[in-house]
Structure formats: structure tokens, C-alpha cells
Length: 155
Length: 410
Image (tube, rainbow over all chains, first blue to last red; front, top):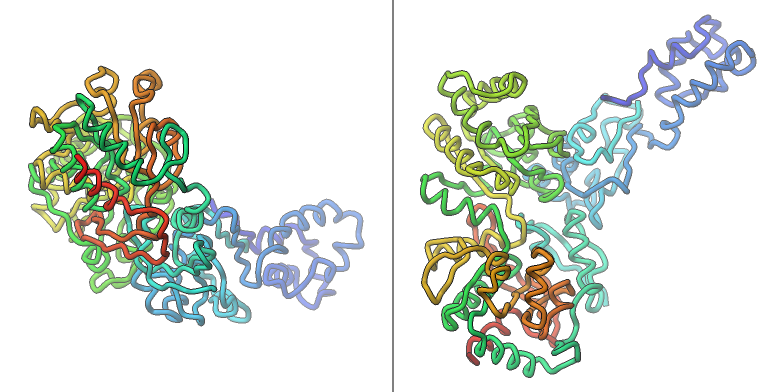
């Protein structure tokens, strides 16, 4: 089951009054929160009105994993990684950057997105990931093929 | 001085990945690139747990003296057992067989799926394709009785599922994956068909798939039958099916035979290939060398020139009075009662410290295969791969050198 944080999950924990004090509607703010273009504190009613304190606590809990994730909103747990290399070979962007990995080999190019080093995955160029802002493509191939569950797309 | 050695063949498992780079400093490997966590642990950790000096009765000894001692012991034994070869080169296995033949000894190695599959493949005529053919052309991979994610970590990414080939142009999207096991394994994460079967029911399940391919209803539990119906309908559409069979099927009587019969049945409809998921680096080579020389992969008695019971039975019954373990931890695989019989009657040639080494009368250290010693080993698709040494070690001999010296002395 996916553990990704969805926009609707976030929206349900916002005031839902569309006051636009954050500059947009509540749904727009939910999208911004997930994209990390806004912070919870940018919603004045949520942080100042005590009637939303429950929602605020739940929202902070929901968004906590995102804080430790990279800009791509992908979390890699090196403790869990077994270095199988499935992500390297399956990643469409990595195959473009280092075509040798299309044939099942470890990526050796310094321009590659990632490589396996010391039996663990190592990200070389995060900015080349399809999920990196501003494009933010909704790609999760690496998560789908990861044997050990070391790679998690958080939102 | 630091040095980078490129395209080293990793001897961490029977996949023998040939795209590993290592960074070497003095006698140690300090960094690996491309090796999985198993390969990385072997490459970086070999110095930590290695046997450094020859031991005779627990005391340090000269290697020549230790070799002479072993030669004398096995020469004077009534019925010695030469054991191992699954972590040795093909040449070392051939030498072990020659020693056993010269002595009229018994020879055995740890139980392996390769030792079951090779004779059955010959009997039923099911062929194996090369891994590069599977990489390029196979559109269906079946993992049976094995979790590649636990044993052969790069199997899916290197050959079977993820790579993009000439025919399987989209990589994993061009292939179907089935994983059949007695538990929900990590490999099942990438499989479209995840079939969790009952313990020891491999033969029934394989025959059930054959029934479904023939259009008959299988005699199986309803939930399994339903899953197999989907699996068989996808198998019917496949053009190249690759079976990867692990030692899990050995738990089931007739399990390996039933899976091979399924592969044979499929080979009438499409291209089909079957591969054992070898447990150790050269389990396949060991079985293949034995098959070539003796036309059997079972434990063999050179005195009576016939296959005999396994080493465990021979030791338990007291048939053998001395064991020479060749890079194999026989005591770790033996019941306690049986291993007590070997007290003072076991010697070993070993790379690393082990239970067997700790209880050996004579223990001879050897160079680490694939790091300090070269040699040819056989991958599970039958391709012979040459391991090239990249670290020098003049203090110990290679396994082949030790075995050929013993052969000369006896």
C-alpha cells in the first residue's frame, strides 16, 4: 500500500474556508504544501485559531516525513538498501544519462543520476531526477522496483 | 598507495557480476562500485576473517609441513572423504576428484539445486540459454523456490527483469515476472504473479500449471488454482520463458522434476530456458565438473565406482574415517552427533576461519578466489568466467597449488 501523502489528505486538515490569506484557496495551499512551496505557518487561521489545533497537530504529523525527504520528495534509507541496482537500471532518466545502465550494468558515468557504491545506492545528481522542481514529474519507478523498500516517494 | 581496479568479477555469489570497480589500498579493498551489499561485504571483509597461517594441532606450522601432514593423513586413512568444491575454481574441483580417485576415497559437496537440476536437465532434454540471450529476448521470468532479493541481489537488475534488450526493449515493462514461493518474499515486490504455495507442494503446483496449459482443471486449492489460471494464460502468450529455480524446490519430493517437466511442456509452445539459482559461487561449476567426469552429481565412492549416500550419512554411519574439507564448512552442515565422530579426523584447506577450521587437525590457508587467486568458474548459464587476481599475496598458496602438491605427494 502506498504511503504517499496526497493533496486531499492535506486539504482535509486545512480550515477549508478559502480566506486566501495565504494567497490562494485551501486546495491551492494544499498543493503548495506538498510541493514544499509553502509552510504550514503561511496559513494564519490554522496556526492562530484554537479550533483548528487538532487539525494542525495532525497536519504536522502527516507532513513530518516530507521534511526529511529531498527536493524530489523521495526518501532513500541507506540502512535498508541492499545495493541490488534495480532502481539504477529501471530509472528512465538514469538510462538516458548513462546508456550502459540500460543493459543492466552499474552506472559509471559521473553524469549519472545515481550509482551503487559500497553496496548501497548513492545519489550523484539529484537535480537530474524527473521529480526535481520545477518539472516535478509524477514518476515513482524507483519505488516500484525497490526490493527492500529503501526508496519511498513521500508525496 | 590507492589504486582503482576496473571491471573486476565479483565472486560474492554465482551471478559473477563483471562490472565491479574496486579501490585498493595496500592489501585491502576500501571502496567498491557496482557490487551489491553481499559482494561489497565479501570484497571489503575478506581480510577480517581470513586464516593467516597454517595450523597443525592448533599450532602454527610451515605450509609445506602442513601439506605433507595432510597428504600423510589421507594416505593412511582407510576410507577418506574429500568434501567441497562449491567455492573453488573448476580446476580445483578437478584436482579434488583426482585426489579422491587416486585414494579410492569418497567425494561429496554440499547439497545444491545445481546437483539436482543438471542430471534432470540431461535426462529430460531441457536447455539453458545464456544470460545475455535472456537479457535481450526473454519476456517472462519465473522465480521458483527462490527469493533473488535475498540471495542473488543483482539477478533482476543485471539479467532477468530490468535491463532493456533487443527484443525486451522496455525492460521491466516488456517482461512478466512470476514468483512462486512458500512465503511472501522480497522478490515478489517486482512480480505481477505472486503465488504463495503450501510447503512441499511445488510438484503439485507445477503439474497444476501443466494441466491448465492443456486446458484441464488443476487438482488444487481454489485460491491457488485461480492465481495459476492467470499465470498460465500469461505463460501461453509468452515467447521466451526463463525459469530460475532455487533450492526451495528441493524440499518437495519430485519438485525439481515437476518444474522441469513444466519447462519441457512450455518449450513445445515457446522458447524456454531453465537455470538453477546456485547457492555458492561455483556450485554450478562443481556439479558440472562432476557430471562431466562421472556422469553423476551425487556423492561418489571411487573405491566401488558408484554413487553413494551423502556425506552426512557416510559420517553418521562411520563409513568414512577421515575428512578433507576443501573450502567448505562441512561441520556447520552436519548434525552434532555426526560431527562428534569427526573429532581429530578432519583437516581443511580454507580461505576463511570457520567451524570446520576451528576443529581441524590440519588447516591450510589459501589465497582468496577472485581477489588474490585466479581461476575459471562456471556461471549458472554454463558460461565459464575467468576470475583474475588483482591483489598480490605471496604468503599463502592458491587452492589449486595446494591440491596439486597433495596430489603429487600421495
